Image 1: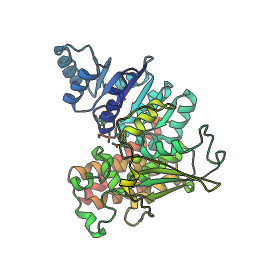
Image 2: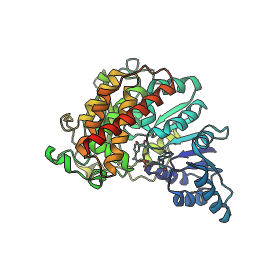
Image 3: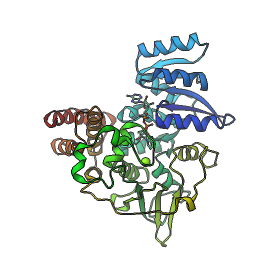
Image 4: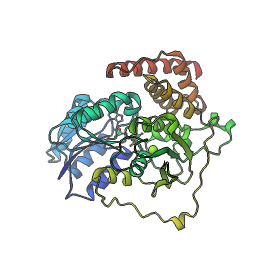
Length: 391
Ligand code: NAD
Ligand code: MG
């Protein structure tokens, strides 16, 4: 029996994780569930999954939830804040931590799980993008087991040799990172300025949280995933190629020196990578229908256009620059996307904000977590300044 903490339980990945866990009550118990704002949803999840702990962002929300749970006869104890998140990520009794908080807020709790040597299921790509080298060193030092949930990285992981010791050692020539191109793959460029949040969040193939949906529409999601893949698989930027694949059936591929190209395919449903990472190296039922290739009929691939998606270029440049550049990129993007979602910043100005921040701020060496957080803070202030000038 494995005890599982789900960070970000009320989000899209959190809900899919609970769906898979509920299919296997003989294998998994829920240790802790955490949320940021949706108290009602977390309350219902606590009654259904009976975790030992729940975590809310502050004392007052925690007391509110604790009161409701006690009145309903629940024995779940409610903790508060980042300390609460770190506690349920690193507790002795926990075996597996699903890191599914969105954005930089997930960095500390995810690292706490890594440092405690847990099996960490990584959905929170922003944490790895910000702190890549520190994060990966912590995985090795603590003997943690890091398994990718991002469908592309999970696909790559499945296509790589079993005892992976680097691309060259495994005879790998290249990683092909696929992306659908989002809802605006064919939108005339002059219409990018008028795109609304609801249009940007209507992804053709995936049902996701609003931040990652906007990232998919700008293709910053693929940019963040490019950086994520460099760190996860210890790959050089030139060893990773982004390929557009509008059907989202091939989730990524690995090309070997002998000419073999291995692909992982499936219906676009995050329960597949979640179930894979939970049970690895075993396989368990995920509730996902088998892929019907005859019904799908056609698989298309094309090269991405960087003029349409400047975020791809910005992410590659940040990765090549190294140090705190990816953390600056990530923070500027988070602020720009939040402003766009609030109806302030134009969609077409998201990359403008990020590029201005990267041009304005110095890049530091990534020596410790405090340096990462300082860069994150500086980029947020700088991005807010740029946005003020643009709106
Ligand atoms: P979401 O917005 O649906 O959910 C986010 C979760 O994080 C919620 O439970 C929310 O309460 C919590 N949260 C938000 N801000 C917080 C804060 N400041 N402190 C503590 N908790 C906070 O997002 P999502 O789509 O589930 O994505 C979660 C992560 O998984 C993201 O990093 C995303 O890039 C990654 N991811 C998602 C998908 C997908 O299909 N949704 C696919 C691949 C990767
Ligand atoms: Mg992905």
